[in-house]
Image 1 (tube, helix red, strand yellow):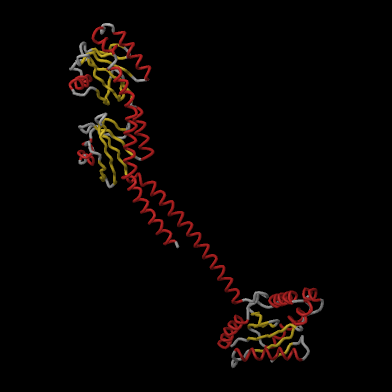
Image 2 (image 1 turned 180 degrees about the horizontal axis):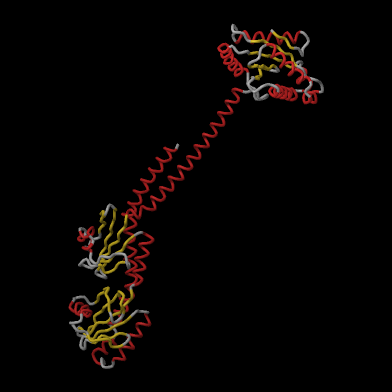
Length: 463
């Protein structure tokens, strides 16, 4: 049972492990990637619409062309948009003056020699009318920001400025943390050069994909616009990566699952199930063994003892008698056999009922046992007939002891109170000789007992 239970648990574990890995590859990872992509898109649509609205606002165009000297007006405009839509910051850069305005007013003048202004010139030279990127801006905050940049054109489609909004992306870090803790997934955003643009804080120490020896070989599979599922091993551990290109951000999304981490729950369930199945099976096995042992003891008892009088039965008495007979012949020790039969027992059953008769038999057997040595044997031969084997007793000693037992039985108050008269028995005694076999001894003792019956009962006859 234990082997079967353990085998079934192991088979179930292997199936669960394979199912978990298959589910990870075919369902969990693709679904997680889609959820991340959807979450990012949700936070991009509104900023994109706001930025587009600002770039097409006639007030903004008119101000850039005619009223740029009135900087308070653009400051108020940008502040209004920021507060209305709960953006972190709104900004505008004039193509003509290269002034950089935010909701706080004029911040600086854009120049090519300032590294943090490179985004402006890069976007200006691009063919795109708008872009979304992730970057730092020391004029706004020290944390990573998401910028939605939009070009402003005049009526003749000449570039007159760039406007847009900025959002803190701390929500992304919370999202990445949630995926790691809840789904055991590590989410990373790479740019086209393999640089890590976004990853959960304090998770990775490397800055570029090539800094990781295991991922360096997979760079071309991760930094690609094709969706991929990649399996690899690192330091003996198995990993699966799902990739996706985020066109809105021009970033490459990597969602990595540690197979060992994912299957930890499966292993924990396996060990728990193994323990429970082993424990339950052990309890059931012990219970079965206990029942078998109890039943065996009961069967053994029923096979050896008379259930009514609690003394050994005829078969066991005969076996033990044969054993002592052999020992007596070898050691030349004395051995005496006694047959006794309750007098007029049929009248007790007929007049008082079998229940009273059974009680008489039980008290009779108990009285015999109580007045013999532990080494002597007492058995029920059948009906109201009992046998006694007196160890180490010759015929004379046997008669003395049986005479004493006769008086105790005749004067037994319990028996008297039960049937209202003194119960007696007839006894036959014989001593075992070296020439005897068991049948000869039994026959002599039985004959002696019947002689006592025929001569008036409540007698002791010796042969």
